[in-house]
Structures are given as C-alpha cells and as structure tokens.
Length: 67
Image 1: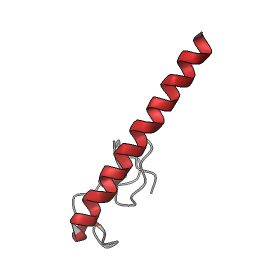
Image 2: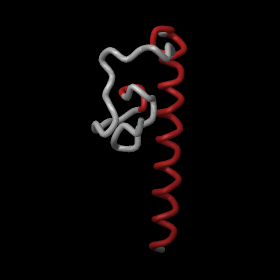
Image 3: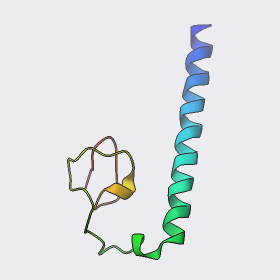
C-alpha cells in the first residue's frame, strides 16, 4: 500500500513538472526576447535560489541556478 502511494505521488510530481516545462516553453516561444542567449538583465546568477530555469542567466535551475 505504501509503495503504491509513493508511486502515484512520483507519477503526479513528474506530470506537474512536464506541464510546468511545457508552459515555460510556450511562453518563451511567444516572447522572442527570452530566447536570446545574450539576455542577462534581470536574471539570477549561479547559486541563487530559483523555481524555474527562465529565472537563471544560464537557463538551468534545480532549486538553485546551476550556471
């Protein structure tokens, strides 16, 4: 029973992550200025806390900006 609950929770978490990344991709497609690699104004630097890769200058986020 516990294993089933853990598996269901993991699948739901993965589904939410996929929906979140799909929304971010669509937003970047609509706003071309966000796709520019030279865009650094207003972004967070390496080691800063983040929720989404869009917030980071390098575009990679795992609770903190990676690059």
